[in-house]
Image (tube, rainbow, N blue to C red; front, side, top):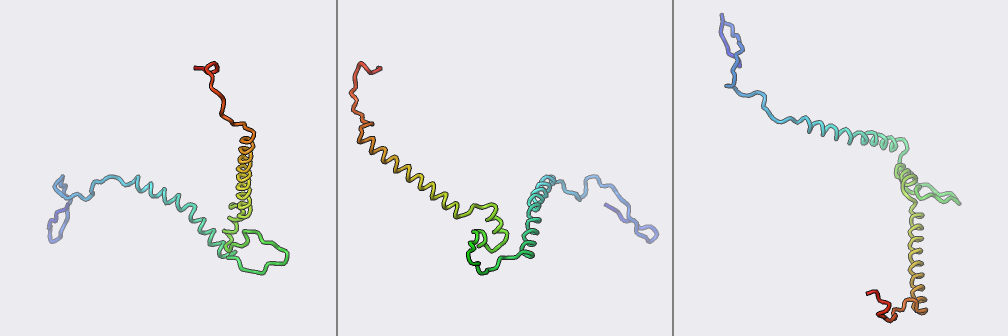
Length: 147
């Protein structure tokens, strides 16, 4: 707080100490430092891979661009990943994802194996029934019993 004094026509201000009878200029509130720090760290680790990734994608779009349709030469069989338009999608399909045809053939192989196992179990059950392997007509005898 300051008080104005008039001295010879000039207004002078003089500092006065007002212990506790004035309005607080700095409100006391809890610190937000930890929240700010957490937000800064979160944004850093979020944007750290996003920015180079976005730059890479834009450069691929500018310098390579999407694929264009062309006639397939005689006797050439295109790979499955060559049908995709975007170069990044083609790279993922070629290097990371599985070939859909091979995946289909593996699935069909497993289904065939399961079917053959089921058929084999049915045949074994029929044979064991005809031979009488699993007959349960054993007579109970008190001499053999353990109780």
